[in-house]
Length: 365
Ligand code: M6R
Image (tube, rainbow, N blue to C red):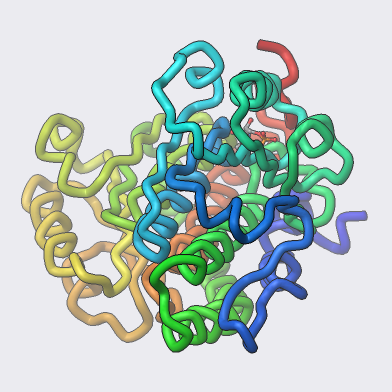
């Protein structure tokens, strides 16, 4: 059952080259330079009329929704709102009649996500489920949807479902981009980027031994900061959640530049900052943020692109991931963050597959 792995979480982390591929299988259409889905149950005319998305979810699924917001707004130029399902169900925000709801959920059983979906349905909005568990309540109640095809996720800490959700978000961004302004050539470039992804994820898994070494160095720390910008801001949130839920270490994720507005007060020699800093439009800005942390005596663990010497000179420890298109960085960068959290939790003697106080699906309010 565990296929030689000591825990389901590690097994599921290592399944990701395959699960990422499964999330795209049959959905990339090179002829039309777009992504296609079998189950949206809306005509191209209806889809084109959508002028706003609301993405709702809880926990890790909420983080993939944030990644989706960045992808969809950048590639499709359609406004996106990301709402915690527990808030959306009671919040009553003003929405245009042509707002489409996406509920993101691995289990398809999370009660707040279900209630938010029902509330949006009641108001007459079309609802879509992005689910892993086939035939789950949310999958059945939504008007349409997209399955992740990631296979059963047993570890309470979501890993492969998260990266699959991010892939589906990229496919949606491509689909809606191509319904609007995105050119045929731009669509093809995105397909090329997506097709390279499984191999990049495979490569990112090679950080495993280095993640274990770094974990041993910092496993005694009680506070961590996770910092990244743009596409890697949600990545920072997800890295922090992974660490706190399985190792019980306090961790906070922030957009890197926000640290000056409070969290930098936490920085000392016992509080490591994990920077997600692959090359991107704001690379130099994030490097400046790394320098600010170092100037205050904080240890820095940096996730960088292969061959990056600039950050390697300043950071205490470096994890190299392969270069990828910026919108796919959250998927590749998630791998070392999952591995780091895993090894720290194991070293602290925690039950990584069944962390205290947590359930795989939260079916009570
Ligand atoms: O099944 P769902 O995706 O709806 O679950 C949502 C959250 O409960 C879930 O992501 C939770 O945050 C995980 N333990 C995170 O690893």
